[in-house]
Length: 141
Image 1 (cartoon, rainbow, N blue to C red):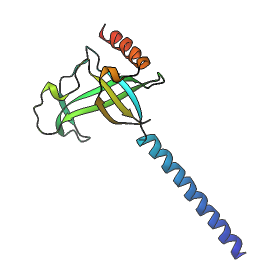
Image 2: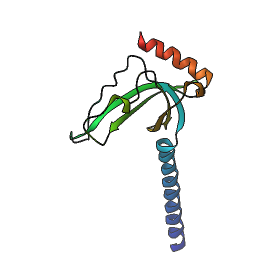
Image 3: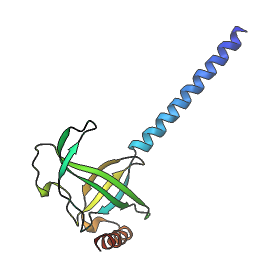
Image 4: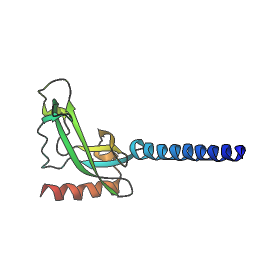
């Protein structure tokens, strides 16, 4: 009888450990494994720096919040959101932020943007570029 109880407890512990590992892996993949998306800052996008705040309402620094439609190489769209902040001072210049017409390569997971950088227009896949141009024209009208 004692062996049966030990066996059942062992199986339950092993099953819980396997479930924990699988859930942890799923969380990690959804949160940190990113894919490439391409976007452009629309011509009429407001890039005026505004004071950014932490969760308590305390001022952090000036920054620009971006919310853009981006596309992967399969043509699937995704709304990407990120903030570019000037952490060095409370006075920033416009050159520190992505300006209208800037093409971006955005690394995004299912949950967050893990990074972004400017990219030359010529390095964007042709199919994606067509989608961006249509998007850019629609937004600027």
